[in-house]
Image (cartoon, rainbow, N blue to C red; front, top):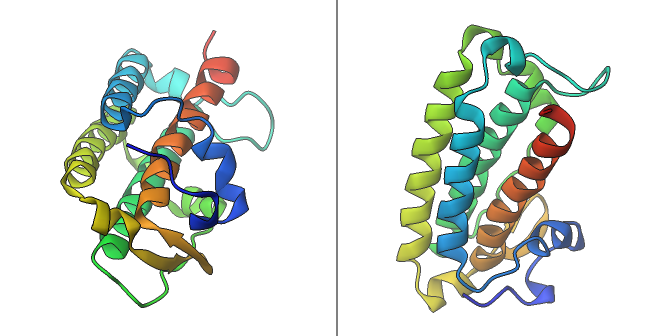
Length: 170
C-alpha cells in the first residue's frame, strides 16, 4: 500500500509514518503484532511493573497505552473511511494511563486484548478500498485521511515496540 501524501496528516504524525519501511503494510502489521505478543508473553507481573526511570510508565502501562491507542486509531480509521464529518476528539494519553486502573488487570489480560484488537483492526484495514482510504476527516483538530491514520496506528506501535526493547527489557 502506498504511504499517505504529506498533506494528508498533521506534521507530528510524520515520525510514526517514517517507521513504516515497506509497501506490504498488512504483512508488516501482522508480523509486528506477532512480535509484540511473543515478546510480552513471557513477561511476569513483576517485570510488567518495571519502569526504567522515575515518572516513566511501567511496562504494563506502555502495553495499556498501545491498547488504548490501537482502539482509538482503529475507530478513527473506521469513522473517517465511512465519511464521518463530525470532528473526532483527541485523547490525553497520560490521563488515560493514569485513569486506566491497570492494577486491577493482569498483564496477560491486556496482552490478550491487544492481540484481539490488533487482529480486528487488521481485518478492518484490509477491507478498505482506495476511495475509503482517501476519505478525509478531522481528528485531534487536524484534517487527516483514513490512510494516514492506518499508517500512524502501525507506526505508533512500532515506536513503542522499539522503546520497550531498548529501555524495558534486558
